[in-house]
Image 1 (cartoon, rainbow, N blue to C red):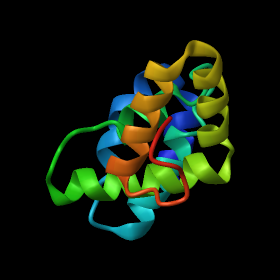
Image 2: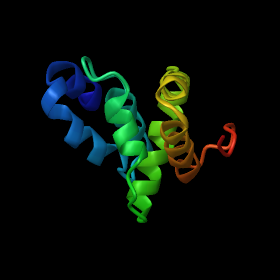
Image 3: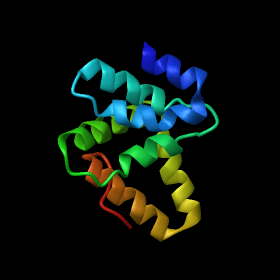
Length: 112
């Protein structure tokens, strides 16, 4: 509840805190932080994609990517990103698909 409230009350300042919390060992803390991160007003899906693209190799980064991926998928953020990439060109699409693979997504093709 605190993560969701933080995102709603302080959307600009909350992103970095929610990114850190999304990797928390406690499932519900991380899950709700990832939800709030992907729901930040005025940021679209950018904050969620930033967490998804995190190159960290530790357990917290893996949890953050998995939880954020789930919320982006639930809310249509993956589809919106890929649709925009189709307009932007093959390089953008290839980068987004690589980010999805690193995050553990299996429902997306390997690239153009």
